Image 1 (tube, rainbow, N blue to C red):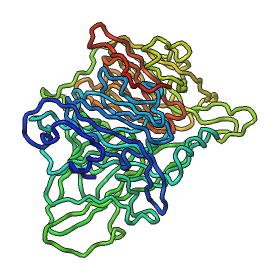
Image 2: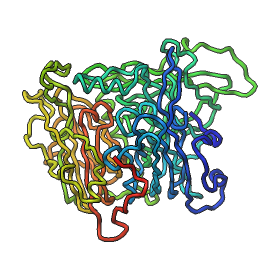
Image 3: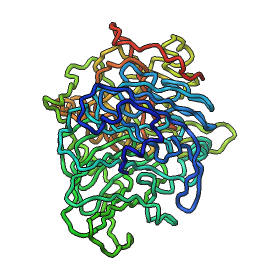
Image 4: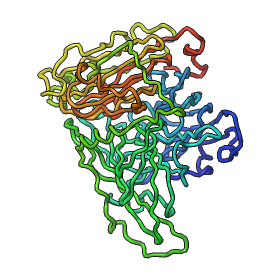
Length: 578
């Protein structure tokens, strides 16, 4: 979706120095004010009209637009009956942990008729991020892009594009997604699938009644476009391709990478990519299909295995041609749905720029090492109830180091700040699996998880190495893990069980990919490093929504440092109450 300045007037009440965004006028960092009214909107897709939760009546939501170094102030007013929070996915939130947004982690939800002002500064980041609701499954429709331009008079480290286009992948349910997750948690089964994937909110021509609900991107011949890609789907990683065109990947999760060419994009839920693509030098109004479909190795139930279609249309001045039917165009071939080796090869190409202009700072000396197993498991079915999990006496669950995270009823950050944490959380999250086993072998006889609200405590500025080890318990799956409040460096990945003796020496400490969301490979492991330089409570979880609902989540508690700039400020006066 290409956004012009006029298109976000609904989201933007007022912000300072708008006229300087597209002009070469030297300008210091500014404060940009937005107002988000969370309200219901009737939207028609796939033969039916459905009432959905939106920002300002927009689906997808309006963009947040800023430059690196700007302060962003967003007043969120809840005009719906559901509790609401919004997470600004990928924003570092340096000394602004109260604005991070996950419900019951950094704040209590905004209740009906109430409001909360999210206030943060964008420090050392530029590129594409996004925002979404962070309570239950409300983010199914409540999401939108965050566009961060470089500072004034600074340029991209790649060719200046003719035009920038934001493309958001999502999912569409005919059913109420709150009913979908509530039913799944009640029965212990996997959730019902979405009815379609979407591109910028449109399901495409391949679905009944959706022939006029197709995303269309008009382009000029011989031009370079910058696509800002966001995967806002709830439960699926995706492959994306445009027929007869190639991409140059230049950015992941708002961090520049060494450019590489590919005809297919792999993108997990929560991730963003910026890619260049150059249109062909043609003299007629050609059309090409774009397509996205899932990557999945899930054994824990069915999933939406459909393909969403969009249209790339060449707009050649003064040339007319017969309109070719979309059905006559060829769908670009995509990798197989279970193409785990393709995903591994694709992600192995990602390398940070790591040059003098955009240096990286990978921790070389590590103070704390962790090994976290991530995967599925079970909880027992309640007495006098028949469940629909792996057996009729169990429910599906998920865990980190066999701890399935229980959400508290008050915000962890408030409990920590006011030192009222007793009965809210404990600080005994295991550093390693308590009972080692063959993680990627056959499913163990005992799949039952433990349940608790356990945190890991880190002194300020601790250097951390974390290996996330996927398990094959109840089926090996790829788990896209997101760490709030931080970027991290992906220093290694591999298949099978992690071996510190043979795998650690192969870590890339020179130019590893820097990001905030990374896929733990199906039947494999990923190793990341970061420095705990941001005090607060920071959620880490799988970004497949059913997995987070099942408990595949935990939190880090980073303590204050000595200096004022190393301490968490007091909470704002309008922080919502539970």
